[in-house]
Amino acid sequence: MTEAIDFRQAGFSAERPFRPWREGIFAALAWGATAAVTWGLPDVIQWGATGLFASLAGLVALVFLTLAILVPLRGWQGGVLTHYGPWFIALGLWLLVWEITTAKLGWLPKPFFSPPQGLLHVYMTDWDRLLICVAYTARLWGLGFFLGITLGFAGGVGLGWSKRFAYWGMPLLKLIGPVPASAWIPCAFFIFPSTFHASVFLVALASGIPVAILTASGISQVNRSYYDVARTLGASSRWQIRNVAIPAALPNVFVGLFMGLYYSFAVLVVAEMLGAKFGLGWYLQFNTAYSAYANVYAALVIMALICAGLVRALFSVRDRVLGWQKGIL
Amino acid sequence: MLDHATVQPLGLTFDRVSHGYDIGKSVLPVLEDVSLDIQPGEFVALLGPSGCGKSTLLRLAAGLEVPRRGRVQGDGRPVTAPGPDRILVFQDATLFPWRTVRGNVEAGPGARGELAAKRARVDEALQLVGLEAFGDAFPHQLSGGMAQRAAIARALVNDPRLLLLDEPLGKLDSLTRLNLQKDLVRLWQVRGFTAILVTHDVEEALLLADRVVLFSPRPARIVQEVRVDSPHPRRRDDPALIATRSALLAKLGVLEDV
Image (cartoon, rainbow over all chains, first blue to last red; front, side, top):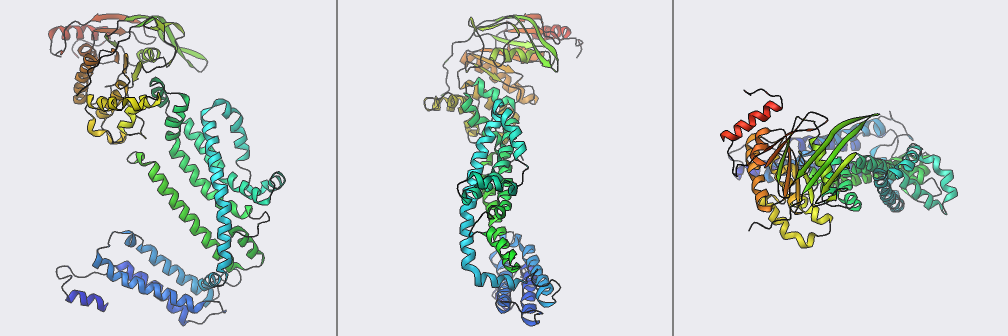
C-alpha cells in the first residue's frame, strides 16, 4: 500500500481519492490465506508439494495485490480482469476450503481425495507422461470429432433436404442415437481393423449424431418463403441447399456442434478403453485401477481445461459465422 | 445514373382457373373459375377481402403452384415453373437474413451464374430504390420500409417482365406507404414491366393501377372490373377517384361513410 501513497503524493489522484481495486484485494487475501494455512498448519498426512503450493499461492496473492493498485492507476476498470474479480476471490476461497478439509483436517481422506498440493505433485512428477497422453488424446479426439461432425453435417443436410433420405435415415438415426458408446465396443472391435480405428469411430459417433439431428431439424424448419424466393429468382436445388437451407440451419448446426463437443469428451474414456497405451482417458482408468486418485483429478483438470478452451474457440467461430444474427437474438 | 432500360413486358392470361388446398381430407376451394387477361405493360390491382385467394392467383402466375383446373399462360405459353422473368414480392420482405442488402440483391444473378456480368446492375438496382448507402447492412438493421425497398431491388435486378406484388406495402406505416406507392408507379413507368398488385386497400389500388379487379370472398370469383384512366401522378382527393372508391367499398360491403 505504500506505493499507492507515493502516487498520491505525486499528485496522481489529487482530485479523486485513490481507490484500489477492491476485489483484487479480497482475492489477494483469499489466496494469501491459502498460502498461510498451507505453510503454517501441520499436515495430517504427508503430501508431496506442500511448500511449492504454499509459495505459488503466496505468489498469486502478491500478483493480485499489485494488480489491486495497478487497476485504478492504469484505468483497467471494466476490463476483462475486473470482470473476473469475483471469480478470483471464489477460486482462492475454494482452494482454502479444499486445503483445510483435505490436508489439514483430514475430513476428506486419502486416497479418495487429494489436497491441491497432491495435484501439483502429480504435475511435477508425471508431467512427461501427461504430456504424451494429451498428445495421444488430441490425435484421437481430433480425428474422431472432425470426422464425426463432417459426416454428421452432411448426413443432416441430406436428412433435412431429401424426403426419401429422411424416410430411411431418420428411423436409423433415432435407433442409433440413444445407444451408449460402450455398447458399441463389441461391434467396433469386430468391424474395425485396429483398436485405434474403433476408438475414432466411437468419438465420431458421439460427436456426429447430435450434429446430424440438429442439422436435419434446422433444415426442415427453414421458412418455406425463402425457398419460394429462391425459386422465383431461378435458383437450382443445389444453390438452394448451399445458399438457403444451410445458412438458415446454421444456428441449429452450432447447437449440435456444442453438444457433439461435450459428448465427444465424455466418450473419450470409453474410447480409450480399447487397448490404448496412452491418452487422458486411458490415464484416468489406469490410475483409478491403482487408486491413484490424485493422478485422476490431475488428468480431469486437464481435460476440463482443454474442453473449456475448445468450447470457447467454438463460441468465437460461431460469433464470426453467425454475425448476421446480432440483433435478432 | 439510373438505369432507364425497359424490358419486354409479359402478357398474362388466366383461363378458367380453379384452385384449392388440401385441409386434412377435404379440399378448401380458394379460386373458382377465374378468367383474366392482363395486357403486356398493364398495371392491374386485385382487390378483395383478406384471405379470399388473391395471393394464390399470384403464386399461380409466378409458377410456384400449378392450378388444379384451368390454364395460366404467359405470352401464350403455359406457366409451369417459377422463373426470373416473373418475380414475386411478398408482404414480408423475406430478405435472406444471413446476407447483406447487397448480397440479397445479388441472389438472383448469383443463383443463375450471371453475377460477374451483372455487378453494375446490382448497384443500379440499389440506387433505384434509394438504398445505395445500405448495401453492407444486414436485414435486421433495416426499417420495414427499407427492407421492402431492398426486396423490390432484389426483384428488379433480374429485369422481370412481370412483377407480382403480394400486398408489399401491407405492413408498413402510412407515411412509408405513401412514399413507396409513388416509387412503385415510378419504377413501373421507368422499367415498363407488367405489374399485378394484390391489396385490400381500395385507395392504393385506384392510385396505382390501370385496372382494378374486384374479387368475392373465398372461393374467389371476379365480381367487377374497373378501369382507371386518369394519368399519373394521381391525387387521392380527385373527385372521380373518390366516387369510384365509394362504389368499390360498397361492393366490398363497407358502408359509404367510412
